[in-house]
View (cartoon, rainbow, N blue to C red):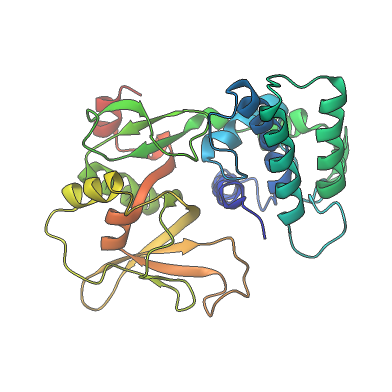
Length: 318
């Protein structure tokens, strides 16, 4: 009961990167990220006089912004379960903040005063818990900033968001026209052949890949652990463009691609980790996504820029 799949999938990606770096298993706090992003969303929504989309949804770049400005925390230091619940349930929190920002917009408030700031912080404290100023992790005391800089020791700027649409030039960046891109961040744009190659080569070299896309399709069957397209598609680049422009494909979910395989018919499938719990289907929260679904319903991928093949990196200028 939480609209923070973006934070779960993004931290999962970063946790895998830490494994690859030899840091071992680190369980990062998703709600530490969600909390500071929520506060930023309130402030930005008021600055824009209600002109953007206010929801708990977000993107990978929101995680990067929190890390750059507030650091990161392990789950054991900040679970985000302020009322001791077993699962995250943000129904009341989301409703309360939505009503608050609507009231502010109706009153013409564009900047929170001290009392309003205190109210938002107190709501977040109540539902998510107070953020500790310092914590002990593996015998050492850290702040959120020193935990990122000294213990994790990785650069959030190493990760980039990539898409593939023809209404903007390839090998350039553009602001993705999606309501969940509420910060108006720019994504790299590449041909679909490069889009797939980046994903496959990253996986082949021990990296994992963040997935942004549509999980509301009739053939996204999470209970069965499968996602596929029911009919043959002759031109995926054209097909995905039409689907994006007609909103047949929507960016409504984020997950984490951790592997791929080939079935006995020669079809490629991606092995994808979801954030709906290891009890949520027979594959313990994972699913297999066939290549045709990936090409049609993936809006964007997130990958370590060092995993991108050098010829593509050269075209991007990174």
